[in-house]
Length: 108
Length: 108
DNA sequence: TTAAAATATTCCTTTACAGGAATATTCCTA
DNA sequence: TAGGAATATTCCTGTAAAGGAATATTTTAA
Image (cartoon, rainbow over all chains, first blue to last red; front, side, top):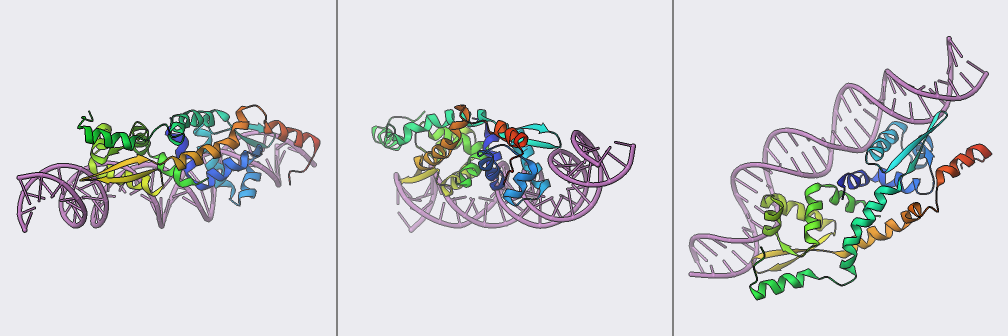
């Protein structure tokens, strides 16, 4: 799992940008206006999101339209797969650990 | 979506800790040893993970056993739901935006 | 009740990063 | 081709957070 994705999404404004772009691609100015950010910060956040591969740009005339790239979300989804077993109850390794302790089995 | 989760996972060592705990609950010392971290840093990272709700503790004798809490991962999973439409091809809003431009339809 | 093991916390320093303001760049249009 | 709109970049500053070292705390065991 690529940690850069988490870093990019850790910043609240960037998470907002992503959630906004889910509704559709937008140029920088619209993003800034809708989220009440000023333009330079918006561009900077978009830069980070771009570097992390979370969004991509398509220039149209004067503007640069940003849209979400699905790939990192797919990667996140695959990573989460490993954790689904957790809440599907097939795994309570704390109990396992307790058993290890009681059975005196070494832990490596 | 709670951004604290992303912040907690943005730190590489913490992501490693989470991936390690997926294999089973462990006390601090074992985590430190397996990841080649020193003990204080490990405790500090576990603190952050705890505050974010990603892990929980159960004291056993001298030790404190850390294990993953499934809930935040479920939250992440639900959040990702909104994005699954993206890679299922039911959504290419960049095209939508282009149509808006061509059709002179206002964008709000 | 004292020593030692396991863990948590504090203090300090350094670094990364977000925001603000100003400016540079790019591209269209008249 | 000059001006303006849209966007990107740079510089500066303040702040949050990570790592190291030392120390405090808790719990067990003798």
